[in-house]
Length: 328
Ligand code: HEM
Image (cartoon, rainbow, N blue to C red):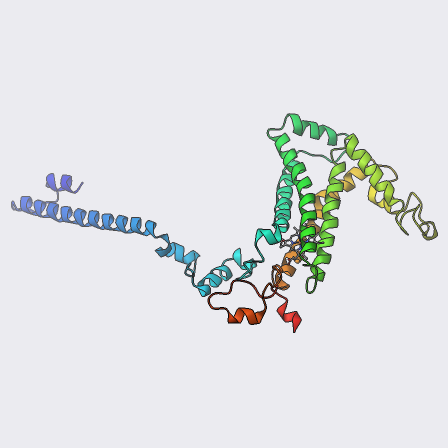
């Protein structure tokens, strides 16, 4: 563009000096272009170099405020200054988080709960809790909805696995004696979580409204008749004025038979109330794990005096973490 303008002489000064002025400008422009090119090249090279070391870029530093290296202080800071990591303790007992101690079952139970929530919400898009629609929706999901069968089976299998995982988790906690002081309260929260998990499974059973679910819920809720005080056939029930039309079974079913009201109630308990309550208590459970000094960890296998005599790094943990404050 600059050359064209110079070439047609329109901006050349009068008196024949136009040729010199125009070539002078051309040289100037060329120099500017060269400088610009070099600057761009240098900048590009600089940016390519930065890509090789992203931790040196301003963008990286604006996200990660501390050095990521093996320094204990920086390692702790990088956990504390991250919105997701700061939920975890800055330091954990290495032996306590070993899979051969925890079996990872608490974590797996929680992971399955997340899978169930996600697939459950997707299933809700296709399911109506009504006697006319419920079973048809299941057939529709199984046969017509793209990936519907996969979705339904992911939900079912995750539910079965969650029950297995939660039992194994409880078993591990029992075997390692982790229910003992100071973790008694968390054991009780765990028991509640176990009951909620079983209730989630039970209420979900009725939702397909097939024969299996119908009879399972019929049998299950019939047992509620025999509840002490609250069931019409239970001990002292009649003394409290319990009848088939006002006892706990009636409250569960929303009537005296397993029918449309029972389906709606099971749906609401299954999709809203129980997951919400379980979610809140999971929060309490995790918080307590941390407040009780982290996961309990393996039992001490050496005396403190023996460790002090040792030279070099400590090979084992002295006490189950979190016990120190309570043992004084
Ligand atoms: C929805 C159910 C549950 C979830 C998601 C859950 C999750 C967890 C997680 C992630 C931990 C950390 C250690 C580990 O993974 O083993 C933990 C620890 C613990 N859980 Fe559970 N849990 C559940 C049910 C239970 C049950 C049924 C019990 C017992 C009745 C229980 C008692 C405990 C105790 C006492 C600890 C501390 C263990 C220790 O410090 O070694 N939890 N739980």
